[in-house]
Every structure is written in structure tokens, then in C-alpha cells.
Amino acid sequence: MSSLIHPSAVIHPGARIAADVSIGAYAVIGEHVTIGAGSQIGPHVVIEGVTSIGAQNRIFQFASIGAAPQDKKYAGEPTRLEIGDRNTIREFCTLNTGTVQDGGVTHLGNDNWIMAYVHVAHDCMIGNNTILANNATLAGHVHLGDWVFLGGFTTIHQFCKVGAHAMTAFTAAVSQDVPPYVTAAGNRAKPAGINSEGLRRRGFSSDAIAAIKRAYKTLYRQGLSLDEARQQLAEQGQQFAEVQLLVDFIASADRGIIR
Image (cartoon, rainbow, N blue to C red):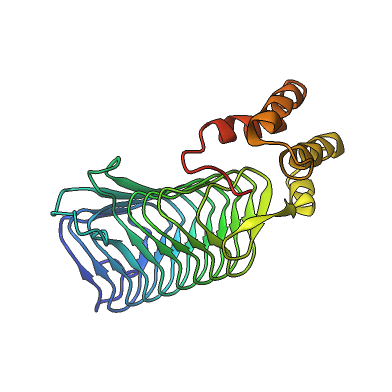
């Protein structure tokens, strides 16, 4: 056994683990698990199911990764959990595999920061560079775009989508889709502006941020119906790709957007 693997760890012979992966005491690694180079698995972590984990991830103690979905319809089908590269998953997080009622896979992209006690349910799709603060809870089939920030104790209803660069405040309860750039707050969550400072830190130009602010006012501050707002946003989107992202998201919002 590798010197990087604690002798008390229980690892199925069928697991595929890169040579430089470290695995802590009493961790349990199942048969259909793949772990990429440079990853660190803490003590007492359980990784099971058909789970692939990329390179340079760090998973802290007591996390449960790849367990069966919490869905009564699940009947043992070989669904999957896919985790990309350079993610940090803190203590007591739970990430479940998918279901055949959806695409059969739960996906976590790259460079995400998942704080303690976060739950990612079956069939969730999480992009890159997100931050999920402590106790954020995603029901099944939730989609998060890139650079999303979820405040602590945020809860998101099943099938909801949160667009790129959006964020939620502490204890937000999200039951409809949150468009890109929008800050959602409250129970039930309502729009509360945009995160201009965050956009600046990510390299958005002053003109682009001004265009996003104008789009937000069009959507939420001018008393327009959604159809009227969409018409104006379509015109604004012709000038700024950043606004077009908002236009495209609204067109695909299956549950309607927060208003």
C-alpha cells in the first residue's frame, strides 16, 4: 500500500486511484471510484457509487461522496457522480449520484469551494468557480452556473436554475430561477440588486457593469411586464454579450424567474 494511504483506510481492489493520492485514516473507497492525481482524501471520508474525482481535489473529513440519491424512485440503477479538478469539499458535505429520471449524473465542475454541511442532491449540475457557504442545500435537478455564490443556509427548490455570477444572501429560500448577475434574498427569495464589486473583481469592464445595471433596472425597476422587459433586454443584448446571457437565461427559465 502507498505510504500516502493510511493503513486503516478500506479501499476496494477495483478502485482506480492515482499513485500520489493521499487517503486518511478510516476512509472508505468503493469499487467503482476513480480518483485523479494529487487529490487528498481526509480521514473518515466515504466515497462510493460510480464516482469519478479529478485531479488536485481536497475532500475533508466525514464527507459522504457518491451515495445513492435520496429519491424513492431510485431502484439501484448505475447512475454517476462526476467531480472535476481543484475542488475543495469541506467537512460533512454530501454529494449524491444521479437518477435515470434525469441524465443519470450529478456533476461538479472545477475550482469550486464547497463549505461544511453542504448538500448536493441527485442530478444537480454545478459549474466552475462557485462558492457554496455552510449548510447550503440543493434539492434534486438544480443547476448552478459559473461563479455563483450561495450564502449560508441557502435552500434551493428542485429543478431551479441559478445563472452565472448570481448570488444569494444568508438563509435565502429560492423557489424560482435566479437570473445571471442577480442577488436573491429572503424567504421566498426576491431580487436585491447585482453584485457589482464581484463583477469588477472578475474583470468585467465598467461599460459591461453599467449595461448589466441598466438591464437589471429594465427587468425589475421600471414596472414592466416580463414580456415588455424581455423586448427591451433583447435590444440591449445586441450591444452587450453580458446582457445577452441574461436574455438567453430568461428564455430558458422553466420555473419562471424571481420577480
